[in-house]
Image (cartoon, rainbow, N blue to C red; front, side):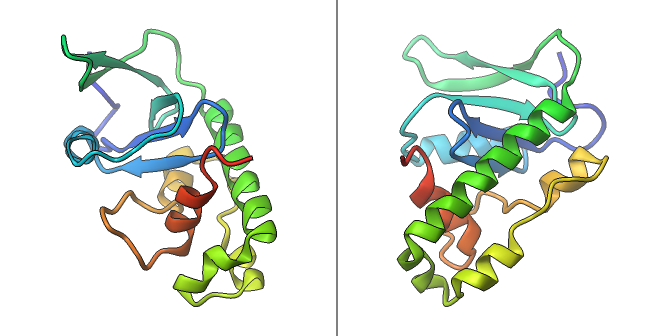
Length: 153
């Protein structure tokens, strides 16, 4: 099965508890991150930009090798709701932990104003408003806040 429809091969990773997400440019981006040992603190799910679930394929030693497209129809609204829940979690987290923003030199008010609003009809465009996963990214406050808030109470 193909991983995504068309040329847009981005992959969205969402924590099963909707506290964290990342956008990867393609499977090789995701796999290279896994090779660099990014620590995930909980279960994750994968989707393509249409909202179709992607199922992980593991090697014999439980390393992620690939993603297979699910047979169920895409559910863009469900993915949008989950991403919205992630952003709401990040907003709650930075309100109670504003020190997370200090490295990025942004105020709490600026950060909250810059949170993407995922209320449009075009899920691929909305995914584009989220920060890409960038290895060692220290400049994007939302990316860094997602790491701080991910799987946090």
